[in-house]
Length: 309
Ligand SMILES: Cc1cc2nc3c(=O)[nH]c(=O)nc-3n(C[C@H](O)[C@H](O)[C@H](O)COP(=O)(O)O)c2cc1C
Image 1: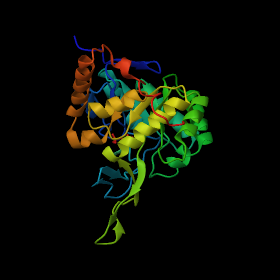
Image 2 (image 1 turned 30 degrees about the vertical axis):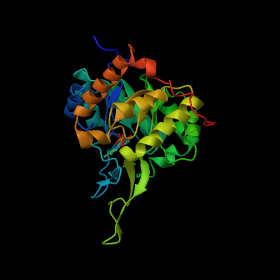
Image 3 (image 1 turned 180 degrees about the vertical axis):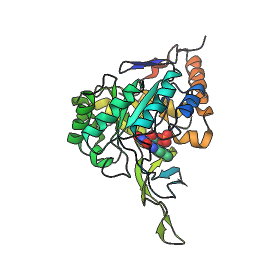
Image 4 (image 1 turned 60 degrees about the vertical axis):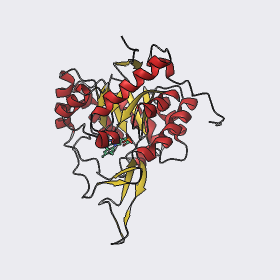
């Protein structure tokens, strides 16, 4: 038997610490089931709100140096349909985290309740989408509003509530503290960084939505930094996300304090095999060092270094 890769945090237990990130494939129950069979310890659904959204015009997803830019505009079929997708995957035994958003705290709470009804093991609040202003960073950049939303959702569901933070802020620890004070069970760090690309031949912005979210390898050091800072500022489990390409990137996040790691863009470039590749790499890493559990690496680098916060 190899090392134990199971992790436990915020009242949930996962067979391994890899999780499919929101928005990458997690739109239908069937695809969430495929990700789980491919080795993901859990999956996060596409973010959904009460009535659904159409999203922005194309191009909405492009490759750039160091990763991808997307300005999808959170298209989704609405909470009734998404409840069915969450239920399909949940009934097949997949641990599903329902990602929700809304235009106000009440909408967040209603969508979260629907995710819980569908059998989700936890809910993740997307208060951090960089390209849909009214529902994204306009919430995620204001600690007070993040607290309000978190509080409303906590009052409506019994499953654990994760708050997904934006890197597009001056001090991410302030927002993490607000989530903690409102009763969040964990924070997910981070959503995409606000970016833009211009076509120099036409001299026009490339994305249909003009501004987009940067994901992939270029985001990784920003995510590691955010986790490191959050870990030192609040006493909440952290789920890392941002540019993980292989087991070493996942371990970096866990060493600075993440209890689990989400993978998004790498699924686009490497396929669903990435989950098995990461867990196999982790097992070998632990074996080579005589460690019996992945839990032994969580936070081992959190107090190293000279950063003030
Ligand atoms: C195409 C695309 C769609 C996304 N949609 C969502 C979404 O609906 N909700 C959300 O919280 N994050 C969304 N994200 C952000 C990812 O979940 C993740 O935080 C980000 O991409 C960084 O991780 P990565 O570098 O592994 O992709 C999306 C990212 C991409 C690339």
